[in-house]
Length: 81
Image 1 (tube, rainbow, N blue to C red):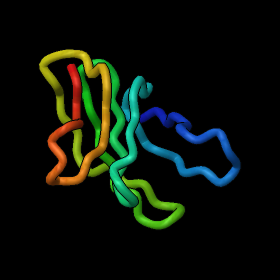
Image 2: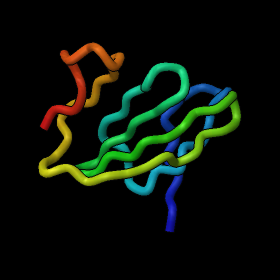
Image 3: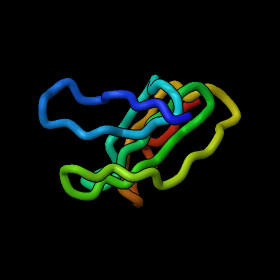
Image 4: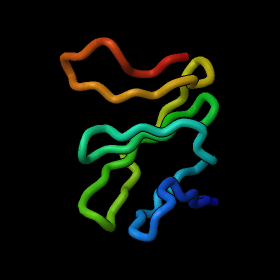
């Protein structure tokens, strides 16, 4: 069963089909969204104003404490356990 959680408090919002209640989330530039809950991370493709599709999900070895987006050459941020 898929549960839907609202990540945006305003009227013009998208529904993100997360499997777990988000604890951390991070935008990935203009076309990606990353959501973490416990030891799971879900990635979504954001295309246009109405479409948010699951891209992939994976488990981590520990609870995700922080999510941060960086460009490919920036090594200063990312997942923190």
